[in-house]
Each structure stands twice: as structure tokens, then as C-alpha cells.
Length: 280
Ligand SMILES: Nc1ncnc2c1ncn2[C@@H]1O[C@H](COP(=O)(O)OP(=O)(O)OP(=O)(O)O)[C@@H](O)[C@H]1O
Image 1 (cartoon, rainbow, N blue to C red):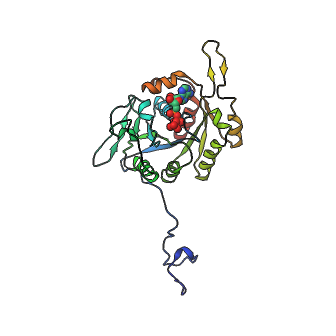
Image 2: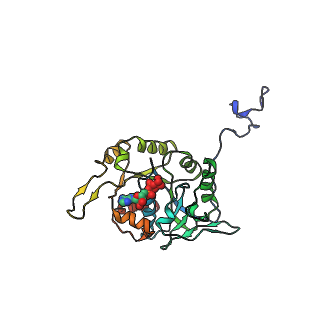
Image 3: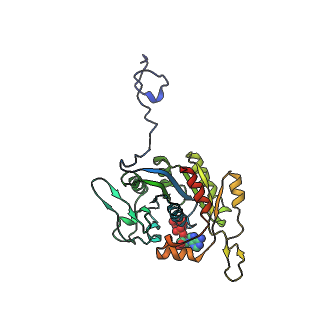
């Protein structure tokens, strides 16, 4: 210890034997539940709301489940949870002294969402930011995610408190960015990309939803929300285009009826392959 020591290690650069841990450097990482095992954690993000992020999260879980992996979904969209509805889940989550058990969908996808804990699905979550962020952490550390290959996290839109909490406290292996043609012409998707870069989370690629509408009468494709700028944005940030999804009334009908697991498409084949390669 130096003679001039004032016991404030934060303002001193000397590596002496009495040095205390730097109190400015916090480790925000949350511990996974002891009974959980997750191979890969994938965040699904969007710059703004309503672009189909929850639908894409659901279909990613369904796709990997169909490929023989055990998928799970952590619904981190606490104030606007829509995952249980897409899967038609009516039962509530249960818990014991060991932890909280996610609810299984019809095809065996494990799901945890705030709506599985509320008495009524229509009860609003009127909580302040730190409580919401704390709930997401609890979904990670107190839920028993048993033998999960892919845990998909449906993030709230934007770059606010909850996405920040997820990136800081959960070891995310990669993110998928969901966007729409309208959104791409604005700067919001770039904000989401830059946030992931700042947090050092690998970006697996971009999915453009509501890209076009294929008319069943004449088989022509119409760009309802304008021409896509996806390739430009993707190449600007050296990102892979994982899918371009059409506007398809069957998608919204499947979500509304809670039958997303019955929706079939080849549109997710590429992203399914990219995700499979992560486990091998
Ligand atoms: N490609 C599509 N074709 C038709 N309907 C779609 C498509 N994608 C999403 N939808 C519908 O649009 C609505 C919004 O989708 P979703 O809830 O997935 O958006 P979101 O980005 O998660 O929204 P939020 O940010 O508000 O949570 C849903 O009713 C969904 O079924």
C-alpha cells in the first residue's frame, strides 16, 4: 500500500496487494436457474412495434421444433405479450419451491410470458421500467428451462430499458432483426443494429416481414408498403438477409386462432439452416 493511500481504489492506478475490486465495474450477468440447460439463446428484435416480431419469434421456435430441436420462448415483451395467444395457450404457469415451470405448447415448445401469470389476459401491466426489467431477469433465472436447444427471446420493440437489460444480463448468442419495408427507409432499424453492435451481440441477419403481397387471382407480387431496401441496408452493415416474408392473411388468422403451430411455409428454411449450424 502506498503511503499516500486514501483507501479509494477507483481513483488510484497502483496494483498493490490491498487493492479492492473496482466498484464502478459491475457484472450485470444473471445466473441461469441451476436446473436449466439452454444451448443457444436467440434475441428477436425490431426497431419499432407492429412489424411482426412476435410472429417471427413464434415461427422461429416452430421451425426449430419441426427440425427436431427443443425450442422455447421467453416473452420479454412484458407490456404487450402476444406469444401465448398465437399458440392458443389458456393454462397458467405453475411453480414449486424449486422454481417456475414454463407452459408447454401443443407441439412441446416451452413458453414463459407475463400473460401466463396474470389472472386475466386482458389485465394491463402498469409497471415502471425497473420492475419490467426485473421480471425479464426472473424469467431467465427463476424459470426452469429444461434441456432447451434454442431459447428465443421476444424483445419489446426499440432500444429501451428491457432490450438493454436482456443484452447486459443474459448471454445472448445472436439476434435476428425483424423489419418491414416502411421501417427500412427510416433510421430505426439502424438504431437496433447499432445497439447490438454496441452490446457486442452477434447479429445473425435480418428478416423483412410484410415484404410483398402475392395476389391469389393473378399470382403477381405487389409491394404494398413500398419497394424493399433490405439488400442495401444488409450490405451496408454486412448482414445476411434471412427471409423476406409476404403479407399473408393466413399468418394473422393462425395467430388470432392460436394455431401458429399449424402454419406451414418454406420461408423459414434458410434461417432454420443458419440456426441449426450454430449447434451442428
Ligand atoms: N406477414 C404477415 N402477414 C399477415 N399478418 C401478419 C404478418 N406478420 C404479422 N402479422 C400480423 O400483424 C400483427 C402484429 O404482429 P406481431 O404481434 O407479431 O408484431 P410485433 O412486431 O411483435 O408487435 P409489437 O411490437 O406491438 O409486439 C399480428 O396480428 C400478426 O398476426
